[in-house]
Length: 407
Image 1 (cartoon, rainbow, N blue to C red):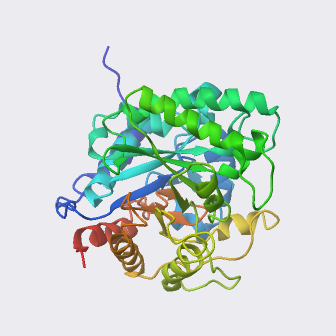
Image 2 (cartoon, one colour):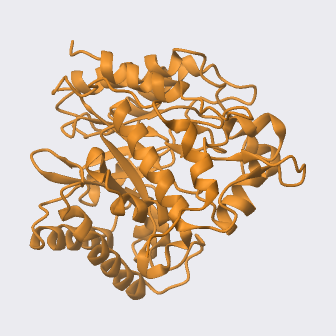
């Protein structure tokens, strides 16, 4: 039986015809890889999209951050709407279009925040499932970001299991992800090694029963990483290139050196933000000086390997305004036209010029769709009634990728 997609899908997708770029943005074969983080809290999930994210974006001033498929309702209590019935066919359609957007811009891979299927995924893995099912999947590769603090428990960051249970849960997680590492669409680096990110290696180490503290990295985490490598190689995926990361990389470097990881990066390296807002143009200099050349980067180990983190923005003002007890006031101002392009070009130049420290030859950009937290390359909602998507940041990224040349 032929299924007819809901009318909302047709209405959402019809304005997009002809918007995708056609230029070959991957012509320079020695360009560093461009990876972009995905956290999929904007798919219509009742708990995350509607209860959380639409709450952050509810004030009129933040509607400009809403993703391209959102719509205004005219209701001041619920001013934004998307996929209220949580229809997965709509998620599939949106993901298919986003693949085209990202691939046409020249993005090499998405790094998906990975929510385990055997834990239910909390509806935060549904776009990843849509990516896997997409007929356009071959146009952009994928990588995974494992969330260390979730091992052994659910979405809550509070530890609730004994170390032995945490270890067994880690093994279950590893065996779930290994088939993805074998997939032809998975991003490989360094001669065929699957690129894998581990968020919060310190939390995982602690929950596994290792001693805690600034100068410790225990045997339990080393054993867990060894198990991951063993299972990946046994499945034929090869030895994964594992990159430790935290929000700003403060702890990750230690675990690169002492727990058998390969490189360090950061999820959201908003170093140097101020209460009044630091100009975005200063962000790359601060990432380079405070992260890359600082004690959590090369400052404490000049041989340390890196995946250089970049940011499309660094302002979580919507979150701070709603929950100042959780989110500080420090932020960067929005990038002026051209600033994001310059930021990306500077990062690509640094990676290419430091190949010994960057054997994976990749930058990792925060983010595709962290709209309320300040990092979004995903096109945003245009003005009614036409709702033509705003692609400025994506266009700047595409220009940087297209125009970069080795120096």
